[in-house]
Image (cartoon, rainbow, N blue to C red; front, side, top):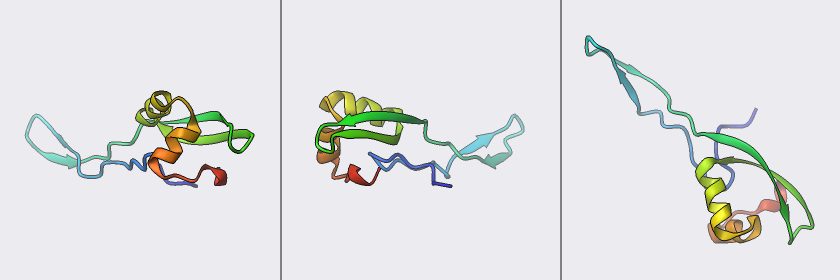
Length: 81
């Protein structure tokens, strides 16, 4: 099983979070990354690439226009996906 990490940005779960109850008891809690399975067509590889991206990672791909440009800007090798 793969870790809950964004393939493009490397975002990880926040393990520092706490829940404060009414009686002010502090309990530890994990805030997970909002990961989505997405499929993009890579022009460089001439095939579809399946990635687990955070929602911020999806917005990053939209900003750069393609998965190839976003991966190049972030220094990620998408050929292994």
